[in-house]
Image (cartoon, rainbow, N blue to C red; front, side, top):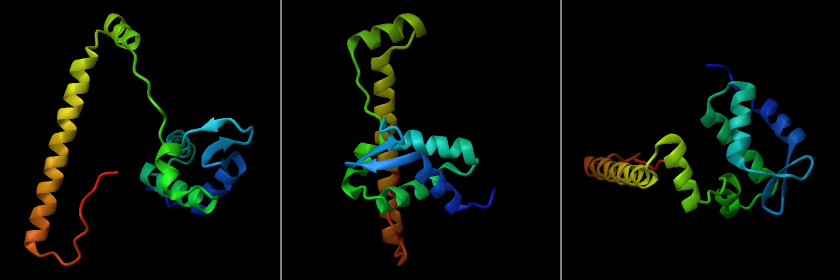
Length: 135
């Protein structure tokens, strides 16, 4: 694993991106999404993606992004239409309803597992226990 040069990433972010009105923009004022910027840092610097995300969050808050607005500015919106479902079925043979049901079932199972682990850790009396949350 490479040693992380946080200052190098911050310089890169300062040179290429801005925070304007709780949105990320490039130097030309085009709206960008945080997850895309993190993936770009991951690709450019070849650091662990979680380290890139941590540096990016610190940079965003230091540049005026309100903490409660981070999630909306970070994630790309997704719009699902029936035409998209039909295209996915005809071109790729994907049954979107079945895929979404499987993803939902998997997420529910993960949430139940996380809750069981949290309960067991608390029962065990671990004083330094921090509840497990996957963000």
